[in-house]
Image 1 (cartoon, rainbow, N blue to C red):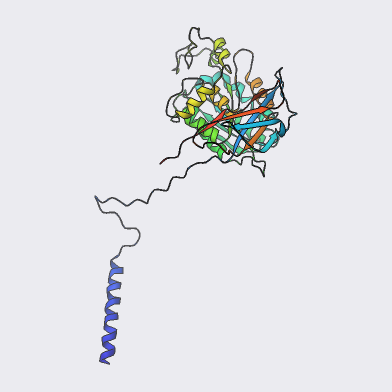
Image 2: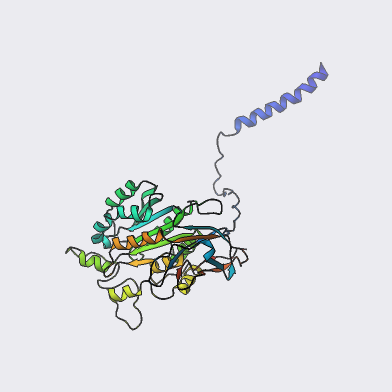
Length: 378
C-alpha cells in the first residue's frame, strides 16, 4: 500500500499543477503588453509575373480605307522582338466581347450629357453585340461602378439613360485602372478555347484631374492584360458652345485654353487640336510612358492609350458626333482580326515590340505596338 501511494502521489501533484495553470490562463487571444511590439506574420514571397499569352487586335484596310475581312491565319506573320511567333488562336470578329465603358460625368461635360444618355442603345447594338457583356463606370472626382458586367442590353441602356452630372474633377487614370482590373478577370482566348476579347471604351475629355494612378502604370497593365482601348474624345469647347448661359464656376483650365501645350509655332484652336488626333508616330511616346510609370504624361493620354493597345481614338470636333464615333468603333470591332501567341525565343525583361504583317500587298495593318515587362526584382 505504501509503494502504491508513492506512485499515485506524484501523478496527483502533476494533475493539480496543470489544473492551476489552466485556471489562470485567460480565455480568447492574449492582449499585447504595453511597449511590446506584436509579432507580425512573415511577408508573402513575391511572385514574378510572366506573360503566357499575348493577344493583339489587327485591323486591316485597303488603299481606300475599307475594312478587309477575307484573310486567313496563313496570311499573317507575327514577330516579338524580331522573333517570329506561332499563332495559337485566330479569329475574325467572332470572339464575344467583355466591354467596360468609362463615361466622364464631370460638370465640364454637362452640356453633352443629354447626348450621351441617348447612346445606350447604340453601344449595345453596334459595340457590345448580341453575345457580349458590358459594365459601366462613371467618373468625376470619384470612380463609380454604375453597372457591373451583364449580358442584359436593357440594363446597359437603362444605366445610360440615368447618367447624372457630377463634380468638376475627372479621375480618368483611376477609372482606367479600375476598368483594366475588371477586365483582367475575364477569360481570354487560348489555343483550346475562344475566351473573350477584353475591350475598354472611354467617353471622355483628353485630360485627367485628381487621379492617384499614373498613366504609364495603367497603360503597362492594360498591355500585359491584353486590354484593347478605344476612346471617343469629348470636346469641352463644343460643350461650352452648347451650354446655356450660366454663372461662372471653377474650371480646371481658363476659358478658351486646353489641357495640353500647343504644337510649337502654332496657335491652339479646336481645329489644330483635331488635326493632332491620330497623327504622327506615337510609338516612342508609348515606350517612354510604360518605361517611366512614375513620371507625368503631358501628351494626349487617350491617343497614347488607344495606340498603345491597338485601338483607336476618335475626336468629336468638327462634323463627327458622339454617335458617329461610337458607330465607327463598333464597325471596326466586329470586322477586325484577333491574333494570340505565346511569346517564345525573346528576352523576357524590357520592352517587347510586336509587328504584324500580311502577305498581300497594298494593305494597311494596325495592331498594338508592343508591351513592357519589368525586370525581376532581386
